[in-house]
Length: 304
Image 1 (cartoon, rainbow, N blue to C red):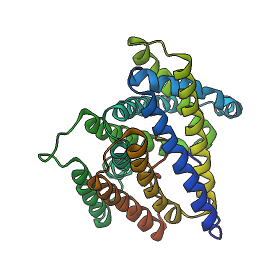
Image 2 (image 1 turned 60 degrees about the vertical axis):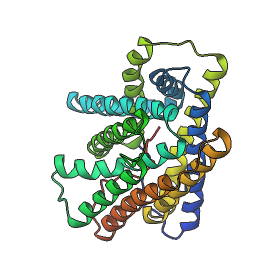
Image 3 (image 1 turned 90 degrees about the vertical axis):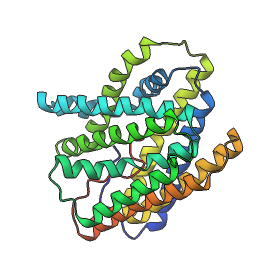
């Protein structure tokens, strides 16, 4: 989970520019996963992405050794790793089954499930503004899926499951982030997800070629860089400035799918994505206005 420190509100342009870079990096991740295709099973692709990314943990090892988490907290780290790891499998599967734009648009649902989870499990009040935002996000999802008017593919169901599982991951991270530094939370996430994914990957292992391994290593590098540049964006400007820039990722994903993979541009997907993202921005803006500690994470946080 990226570090969200107190922003320097005098640098909104820097925040926007860093968020543009973040969007480009994450679109690069989706492009590579789409390009690699489905020869390698989703669980194995996800495992290789995290296993190859363990090299980036080197600077975090000292803090992780010094943390000495309790048994209870180790269980929470494990719970988060399980939820996040299975969610990543669903994401990799969806990338091979439905257009890039639809994966991106439905990915915006995760913060909405965080809001619901905060009310159900953390005792937060489900105020009228949150109910409105949740209803708006549901309408946005229906615009994308259009049940009864088009076929709902397994990839769509996978992204709904992904949103619920990532929401669980973010809520668990809330407890852990209050007790441990971000490097420890990120480090344990990477290790636990790799462990969780290993048996799923080994159960149906397909030997990757050297080229496929190189592509997935690049996925790990781009995703890690994306989380870092997102951190820089949040340090430079308020979330209310940087969050709306996330919409450009949907536009880039749509153009990428059309140009590189011949995917049809679906205006309903763009409209639905705008409605969902708009609800996330509204919740974030209201939480900041009321000076409450928001539990809704950035819509791109720890996606991959």
